[in-house]
Image 1 (cartoon, each protein chain N blue to C red):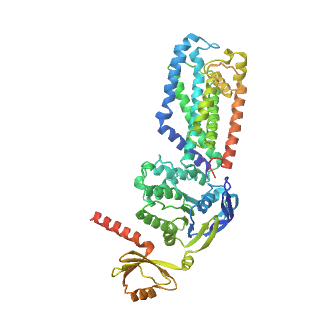
Image 2 (spheres, rainbow over the protein chains, first blue to last red):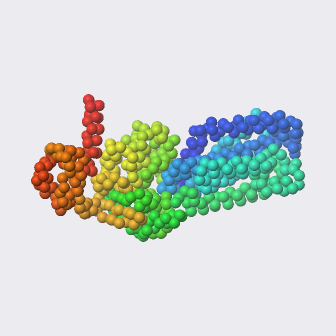
Image 3 (cartoon, each protein chain N blue to C red):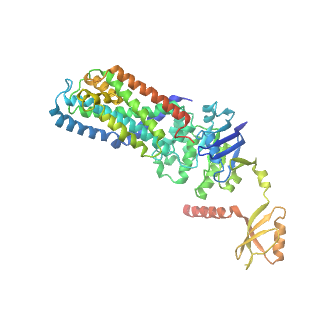
Length: 254
Length: 309
C-alpha cells in the first residue's frame, strides 16, 4: 500500500473541489475583507490613530488575514468531510486500505491549502490599502500554517460529530466568529478594562492573532513562545483526538 | 482456497438489535455465490463487516487467508464492493471517480489511468467518462460503481443488489458482464431479491434469515429440493372455470390460460392426461418465471432490429 499516493489523491481531490467553485470559496473573502479595510481601516481607522506605533490600518491587517484563514480552513474541512459522510462517498475511503492518519492528513491538508490561499487573497487585498513590511517572515509563515492546521483539525472533528448541515454551522457562527472578533483583531487587549484583559487571555485565538501580528508588524500583546506552545498543544491534542475518532469509527461506521 | 471465510460472526447494533447471531460461511475462490435473504435478514450487515464499513461485535473474517483484523490492508486489497445505493460524488466525472479509487488503493498514476480506461470500457462507460456523474442513468451509475470496484483488480467482488431497480434489458447485460468477470477468475458474491437472477448466475448459495444462515449449499442441490414447479399453460380452447385436479394447484388466469403448480413427483405427462380427461387441451406451456422477461426481451430485440433497418 502506497500511502503517499492515497494522500496525494485526497489532497488533489480536495483542492480541485474548492477551486472548481472558486466564486463561492475564494471570491467572498476578498469582497468581505475589502469592505473591512475600507470601513474599519480607512473610514474609522483614521479617527482612531496609531496603536503601539502602527497605524490602525496596519494594526488590523494581520488579524483580518488570520480571521479569514481560521474561518476558511475550518469551513473547508467541515463542509467537505460532512458532505463526504452525507453522500456516503466516505465509503470509498473506508473500503480501501487507506490508513486513518492518511485520511486525516489529506483532509487537513486540503483545509490548509484553502486557508493559505484565502489568506494570500486577503493579504493581496490589504496591499491596496496599506504597505506591510514583514518584520519576522518565518514567524508569520509558521503562525499562518499552524493556525490553518489547527482549525482544519477542528473542522474535521466537527464534521465527524455532525448529523445534519445545521450541526456544521453552529460552531462557526456561535464559537469561532465571536472568539475571532474578541481575539484582538480590531483592538489591543491593553485597551480593555482589567477584568476583560484577563478574560481575553483565555481566548486561544488572541494568541494566534498576536503572534501573526508580531510576525508581520512586530507588535504583540502576548508572549510569542506561549502563543506557539498553545497552538502546537492544540494541534497535537486535536490530531490525537481525530485519530481516535477515526479508529473508533465515530460518525462514519455502524 | 476460500475467498471468504466467516466464523461465528455477530453484530449487535447500539439500539440492541442483534443483526447477526453467529454466522459461519465459506465461499470458495472462483465461485459465483449467492447470499439471499429477506429484508433485514442480515445480508447487508454481513457485507458491511466484510467491507469494513460496519464494525463486528464478534467473530472472525478471513479473505483469501488474510485476517480482516490483523492483516486489514492485505484483506482490503482483495475486495471490491458494489453497494446497494449510489455512493460516489455525483459532481465528479466517471473517470475522476474511478481514478480517485485507484489512488486510494495506492496505484501509481499511469497504472491508474490504464486500469480506469479498461474498467470504464468494460462497463461500456468510456463514452461517458467526462460527463458529470449525476446526469448518468440509473443503470450507468450502477455500472460505474462496478467499474470503480474493479479498478484495483480485486480477487473478490461483492455485489449488493446490483440490479435492483434497473430495467430488464440492463439487468440482462449486467448478468453477462458479471459472468464474464467471473470467467476471468474473480470470485463473485451476489445478494439479490431476484431469485431467478441467483438461479441463473450462481453455483452456490447461502440463505440468511434473522441473522442466521439457514441454508448453505450448491444451487443445483437446492433446486432439487423444490417440490412444486409452476407452469403457465396456453389452452387450445376457452374454459369457463379452473379445473379441479387433486394434488395440483390450478388457477385460471384467463379463459385460455392456467397457472399450474405441478408437484415434482407427479410430472407433466400425468397432468396432461388428467386435463385431457376433462376435455382441456394444452396448446403450449412455459415456465412461469421467465415468460414475461422473455417476451419483453423479444420485443426489445425486434424493436432494435427495426430501428437498425
